[in-house]
Length: 191
Image (tube, rainbow, N blue to C red):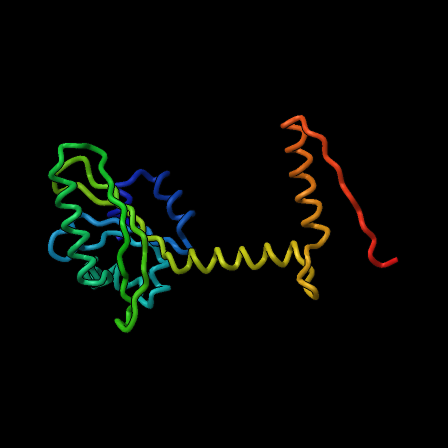
């Protein structure tokens, strides 16, 4: 399967995608036809996070229609059909769809971005990625939590010296940029 992709996508571009998408919330995908089942030529190995075996994709046992919720697959293929009837080149589509977990008991919402082929022949292929919105949301929540912990006292929850230094630096830059004066008042509550 990997050899198929290497023929279609320049080697340098493939290595870049593989290094960026080897882990994390993004699944990179390539296929030649969206008609009927959408046989997958290449999919990044992190599809295993959805419970699938990577070997099943390599052996051609799983197609695009097997991993995408049925209604979303129909919607995706009809969007591709509508976009392809336009006479524009370098077209792409963006949307959301549900990818089924391998056990079919659950699904996750992914945002997709697909670049449509500019040539209409048997060698034309579709490139796209699916971004796991739930993982992205979880990563953002973790970032917000860590940022809060960095700028607030763990015992009292009050802003700490790091937040003071950060905000003071911002205000100094703002006052210099706008040619304003800046004053600081310090109150010692202990004594």
